[in-house]
Figure 1 (cartoon, each protein chain N blue to C red):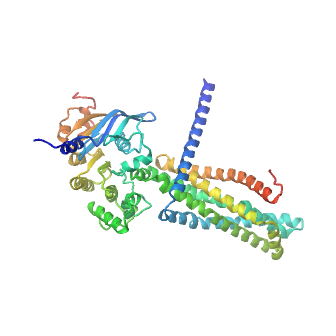
Figure 2 (cartoon, each protein chain N blue to C red):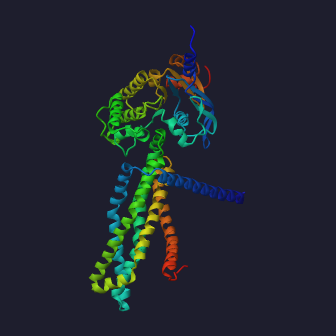
Figure 3 (spheres, each protein chain N blue to C red):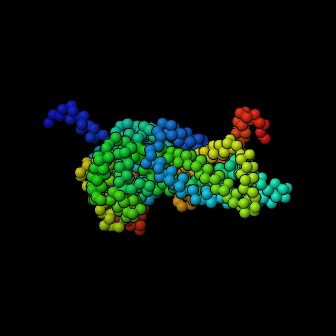
Length: 267
Length: 271
């Protein structure tokens, strides 16, 4: 089949990773988090980054958004080097992202409506009716219609995460970053969040990066699973490939079995 | 090598202090840039005005009233001993209007508002709300610091006037209870207090307000993780604001004395 120039260009754009971390090093004091980390995230896929607590999963999301700067290495968003951009230059790039924080990070000085509307009011000149319509639409998407007037302290943990997701979706982002979306939730609520992630993926066709140590969540939402260990990637593949991975460190983590040997390979 | 280690520690301490000062300078510069280029929105400023102005008023009023009363109780005996009891009002009112009103309003604000600002912003930092603002393409200094700075800067002159008023009233009530003649009390007060005294007290309170807001917001943003980190940020905010008020007070007094001498031609104490 002969493809037109436009189709070829679109195909190349689709194949080009939306985010690329190149030879990234990051340390906090004596704690070396990343050592020469190189990782790419493909468009319109859900990539789950796994690893034990403290391995730097959340740090990776903050590096992508420019909330933290790498000590060495480069970060590219759609081929543009964003590593050294100022806060002002990063603002338009960040508007293409939505981030769901581990503790939801809802602004506790604003009610739910204003939390969800925050970026709309900050970046778009919309009428009050239009803002209200978008807020209702996004809250309905996360099954929280009618909660507009509640305050963050009136919400349960699961509701907070869903409002955080609605806030992240308000600007119709191309990429959604989820930081431990199911941590601290009961299994049923955690599964509700997983369903939300899948629903957003299905309906909005976004690129999603989920960092978690919840394997049930990872298997359910992930197209691709990446495992970090001591600042490096030790496994990268589909959920089935991860299950079948022979590295004892991977098996120890995915099976949640501390009695397994933590060394490399099948030893 | 204990001497070498000591020199290294001193050097590290000095370097840390200089670095901290530089960070504070950058922080203050960013705050003033946002203040000039993008004034805060009413919906962000209004709750801060309420928090700083209305919520602080009772404490400031109580403090002012008791300071006026204590001054009267302490001074009355001295003035009575030299047969000048009716002059007690002049001393009380000059002290309150020029120094105690603005300084005590500032100190109370440093304790109430400064500590609360640092704790609030520190908590927002450790709960990632500050990162969430940045992730949404918003500037935390513009959204969190500018409204708090403006509210403190705008409200402290009013609080100072309230503090002055109740201080004067409290002093008068105590003097009156000692039998001081009301007419002479106010006449001597009016003879001594000039408009410039009232103006200078209110003017310097705006500097105290600016210092409290800047220092406290900065300490909040520098807060370390956990309850201890936030608690320390609140404590450091109060102590630093308190010291800043006293240091600023001294230099503003020198400056205002100079201005007074320049305009009215009277030689000041320090210049």
